[in-house]
Amino acid sequence: MALASIDIGLLFEVVWASALAGAVVSVLFALVVLFGARSAETRRAGHGTVSMAYGVAAVLSFAAFMGLVVYAVNLMLSKG
Amino acid sequence: MDNDLVLWIVVATALAFDFTNGFHDTANAVATSISTRAMAPRVAVALAAILNFVGAFLSLQVAATIASGIVEADMITLAIVFAGLIGAIFWNLLTWYFGLPSSSSHALIGGVVGAAFAAEGPDAVIRDGLIEKVAIPAVMAPILAFIVAGTGILVTYRIVGRLRPSTVSRSYRLGQIITGSLFSLSHGTNDAQKTMGIIFLALVANGNLSTNSDIPTWVVVSAATAIALGTYVGGWRIIKTMGSRIIKMDPAQGFSAQGSGAAVILAASHAGFPLSTTHVISGGIMGAGAAKRVSAVRWGVAGNIVVAWVLTLPAAALVGALTYLVVHLFGDGAAGPVVVSAVLLIALGVAMARRVGQGQTLTAEG
Image (cartoon, rainbow over all chains, first blue to last red; front, side):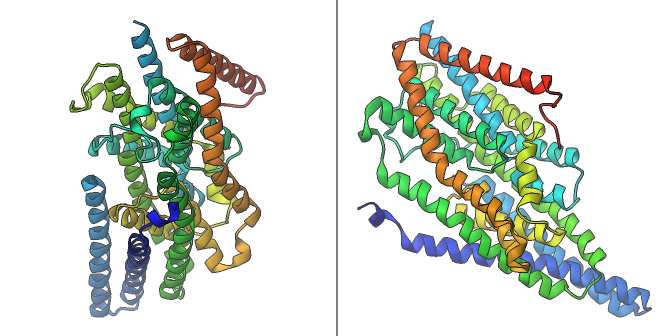
């Protein structure tokens, strides 16, 4: 029976890993946009310290996002 | 001499398939970026072409067989490979003509399955392999991408929904350049390898190389060049379908479709379950549109795309089988491949001449 050869465990792994990776990508970049925009708004309002805090958060979010991109490239190159 | 002629015809056909693979799949990486104006069309396809070229050199994990696990490898001959390639090229050109995104890998598998079936009978086809490696991923990829991209855009709107739309759009356009580049690089590392594998297989079958040999540099360079040229020419009809005919997308939706799509492809690939880039990005675009408003998706267009996916394997298989039977009529020598190639080249030339004669350019962006 052909369907017997399907690895349900593998399919489940694909589903949760994909969902998790997709969610992390969306959240991280959305945070980059949010913190970047808040940083610009508070700077215009004259709140230098708050602006810097948002700026740092934006940079950290972007670094985490780029870390994921680098990890993705590494996955591409290491597939066998 | 006769065998060498067949070999070079197979090599040329494999490169022609690689070219159609490039221009057919350009849309996967650039359609959303062009649609949301993250990049100008020519810049987008040029970047995609360069990254496809680079990607082809980055990963040389070339399988010595095509459609492995789906057809019996020891039954594959140069004539079967040639006929399979013709089946795949036919389907790529037909779906491009109708502006329908479909999987080039499934077309190639279909072509080879059909040719192997015609040559050796049903024993040549591994049914479990077809279900496991084609049917299940084909069903799973768009559904998974639909859900992940849909969830992604809902989360995104929740986080950035109160910001000024112009700020959000500008930021997501920049993000799309990154995710689009990732898609193109991934495509180069995956799809150029298929052609390298076919040429390597042909060289081994002809006695020019042993199975343990390294891939010759000219094979890598020619496969990388063919896929990059195809990408640069751009399958504009498919780009139009994916970029604006399924949904009218904003940059955040474009990013969500591409970002979630890349995440799904890489996560699945890492788990040893490769999915079609075309199926994933198409599902992602539909998901990003439907999550905002179900009626935002043109379900008629989406339905046509799904029909094309269902037909990919049987249609390519049918053409692959017919091509094999025609080649076989001329015996085991070079006559069959020569005649089939000549007829197809003449037909292609006539079609192009008619198109130019009607005042249409061959690579029109419109």
